[in-house]
Length: 263
Length: 66
Image 1 (cartoon, rainbow over the protein chains, first blue to last red):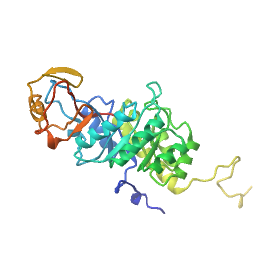
Image 2: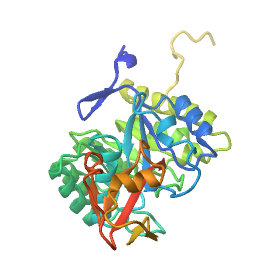
Image 3: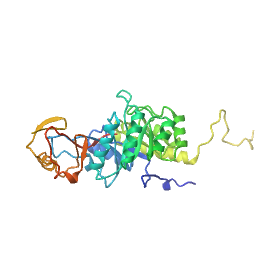
Image 4: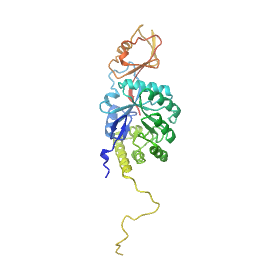
């Protein structure tokens, strides 16, 4: 039997056993953020970069006090960037914020209604950032051609969407996700659009290396319980992928032998 | 002199250094990052970096996001 406890994937030279990556947005407070992330078992946690509130409560706890860089691999993201230039600026600020840490999640968005990626601007930003020494995990469409181009450009991981960010619609195009996985030599993570644990399991059954999610956990009625469910969904899907599912058949195949019937 | 701090006009003394500005905002030692006129200002150069009139200063930190 394949031993799933030895199962891991590697990003920027570091090995990870958890294939669930989580965001830190939309939680009620930092305590809930902390509890949900612990329950998810995630080792990689993403966050956003925004203006500091000048002149407001100085003792307000900082996200990085809860999501400590000693405990997690932090993945700053460029959420909210609608052009290559602001995405590049955001990554440089994030690197400074984390004392020279080069791993970033690049997303350059096309419009506010769909939050679909602007792939031309994403390519432009990725090129600048790679030259500047960043390790880029890149959010993109479920488009096998673009996924390959981003890989060839030097992105260390390609992260196609399952469905629009925050929509919870699940994987809209399983065949494209499968094709992206089959073509890839870098880790492929589904990023955005999963709604519940079965969606996460399907992504893993398709052969993805992991899933990054935020709203599906944070917007659940009980985020901590959903974080635990997602962890199990990811593990179940991964084990099913490693186990190799049976071939689907159109008609029945009896599970009990026909020989030895006594009537 | 006048600068823009996170998009708001702000009056500060002439020749204020970045270190002094951060100190006056009680942000010293906090996990922040700074850019001026869209260029990163590394932490190591805060003391030597003197602000100029009309500089656009952005001070950012980490927040929850996905």
